[in-house]
Length: 282
Ligand SMILES: [Zn+2]
Image (cartoon, rainbow, N blue to C red; front, side):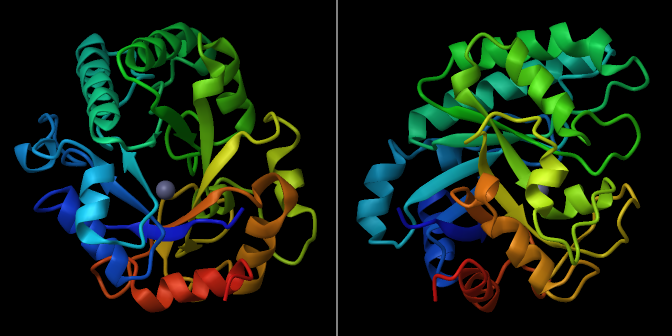
């Protein structure tokens, strides 16, 4: 099976435009925001006008084979504040239902912050949110993203994510999206060592659980607990360590999605080409 490699693209204008932007940078997988990443507003009409990704894909003859969505950054299903939790629940449910309608195969979620309450105190609420969102959507997978560990964010360890996956009703529909920058910033310094993926995952996740990788270099040092993406090779991690990590067994099948800044407009064609070389596909 060939591996899908691509990046995050703007969905301004609709899914067709997003596919075209993906095609321009040579992506076989794209990630989009299906609603504004920093607002509570529902899905924009420009995106909901499409009956399906399959139809749009045919219409544009694009090289994009898969679309994943990133859930709004505001969503915090770990929040002990009931108003934030209820809003988060609504946006998560809407996003997954919408993804199912347009043929997006998976949605990536930052679980959020428990604000000092502790994961075990919030695990039931997180599980309920995920169960409800999955039951209201057809066939969409939810991928939990590891965090850089700022504040009281859930997911800076894979044990956190494993505990959530174990708790939900449909664990087969929940996987992990591993962000290489968050992993490094959370304190796993995987430079210069082989077997880093296995060591960083520490056997916490079932095999095949990591279905997508956010491939990013880091502006900040290992253990800085900050979410700061950098272009590949321009940051603290470097090409060699990133390439070694994403080609190791637990990660070697996962889709590779760049979230790098490029020149300010996101991943460029040269970045996707570099990523393809890193996984030995060009
Ligand atoms: Zn990410």
